[in-house]
Length: 307
Image (tube, rainbow, N blue to C red):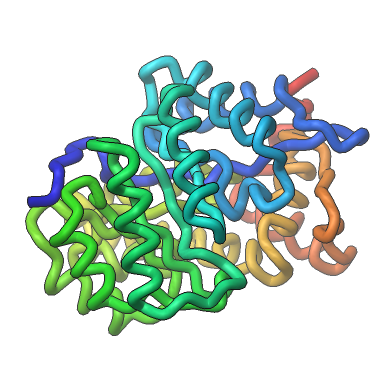
């Protein structure tokens, strides 16, 4: 039976990783961003995922970013640490490290570049889950980044066979596939949207929340959207969904987290720095992001958080 994890529900933020001009992680800024998330009502924090540019973080930096998130959260929010790799042995090592630092759960992405078969995906996730004991594991399906899709039947098989595989972050965009998981999942297994724009629809279908990019910019509004959906206040939820939809869509007009970081820089929350091969967004994208966040009333924050 799937391990019951009561707290794994609601709005989780896929945290950006702020960098200084010299390329180092901006630790003061990261602390302030975590505080802002908690103040905005977010109780699930996801460092070192796709939005956190984990592909360009060193192993030492991974540990530091996760550790700082745990330290600042101080029991006020749970931490689901990104620990995936295209090497199963490395994913296991990262998972152990994150748990030692104090992460509450692990987000494990499908191996990228290798393009494993469904049998290979099953074996990978079983190996990681088996290596970490009862630590909760969240599968992360994002075919647009990994070049492989974790099929619904593979997700359901893993959910049945490994009690500590407790959830999936589904970012395939395939609603039929997600519905198959929702319909066939065992008791206690959670389904989290990996796409902001599909959140309301998926919660209506039975999903348990989301891992959000837009909540980096608007944690209070994204948290409220999920709360309204859980309360079946559909009219208010739809109104807020359509208010937030331009932001949800604009965040992906260039490779994420480019537009999100551009918006956060305009809000004074961080410096718009990336690690190659990611680069700052085009000026037309920055203009659009300014328009979108201005419409949401988010341009009022003008002081850099780490100042």
